[in-house]
Length: 533
Image (cartoon, rainbow, N blue to C red; front, top):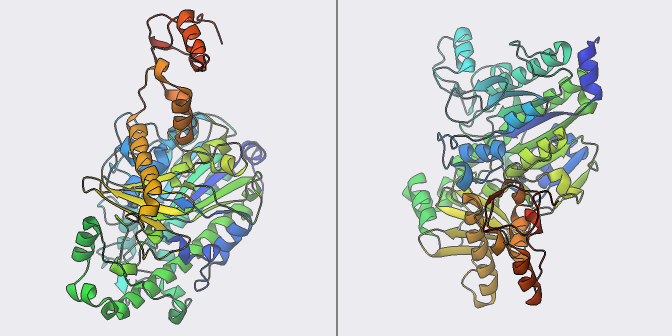
């Protein structure tokens, strides 16, 4: 294959990045995380050539807010997209904006799920699948071939009605490959869009809707999963269910399902089989993307990130969706970074991370190491160049605040006084709420204080500089290592006499040194000269 001079520079310079995001994919249904009942050779290959992250969670167990966190590097309480179909706050800087400025070509194809409909949130090239929206490109094309099609989700016996190559996620995969082919051969996207600079590598967001409902795997994958090997749904074994969960479970289920959970197992088994078959279909599409990268001669210079917006209970505890659930199948997500030179192939990491960290990780690869919200580079955390978290946060609106460390899952239900604590290592099915046991009082207090800290961090930290005691600064840096980049300096120590008083009290007289060389928004006098560094 002959490539032009521009593209030869692309393949020898900074790395391309392909981000594959699935919708509602639970981590424990992948062999990389221990599942042995769904064949996923292509995703396994990504794992073998990269790092599997074992403690990755979603920033929000619902589509729109989770994806908003991915592209802003902010928690839900900061970016403002608190549920589906709500835009982020005005003035938000998106990941694609930063990548454009860093000299990347940015493209997004497939399931997008950002509001409002027409906003490309910075991507130079966009071909989105929008389910049954009147402007959905895919549905228009499907109707041209099949005039009887009334929806993108034409169904036939728990499968997609038409050929696999006509499936909505096949369309998205086609658009991804179409972009890579056009850009690698000509330096422009299929619609002629291009970056501001020559020799630009690309960032490609490739969104698959599967395995999100409706359960419509292609007919061609039928028989690929043995239904007898699929785990049966979990039965709820607790009585102390928070009201938010009680109401959700009630309106999601017929009364007989709550009275006799096993009564719905036959229906659930069919749904689970279809869910598993959709994962097989995803794996095939992943293989197509990787094959295209190799055939175009750009695989070696491309880092691949594979993940999901959130998980899915998939009928465990008679819960059929994502939502305000503290349970691992919904809260935890697959996270694999493959084919990156700074990461050991075939390794695992237990760092606390999540899709909130996609942005900083991508920007790290792109050479932009400035703060991106509270996002942290997963590559940096694995290699010890970026501090690890001690606690990670996920939010479902203001209904639930989830906190996880490497052992516990803690959930606070605002305005109810209710909280739960589960030991994931000893009790992976969350059968025993430890929160009210006296021996866990200190653990609960620790997590509750972290909830408060995270909410302060979300609104923006406002502290007068002379009150930024060393332990306060260290605590904020533990939650956001780069917070000083966006921290406004008001009222530092005013003169050398005040500095001396601090020293005589046996305290650290240098604790305001971080103010040097920074713009001082307001002061009562400054103890250092303007040009002091």
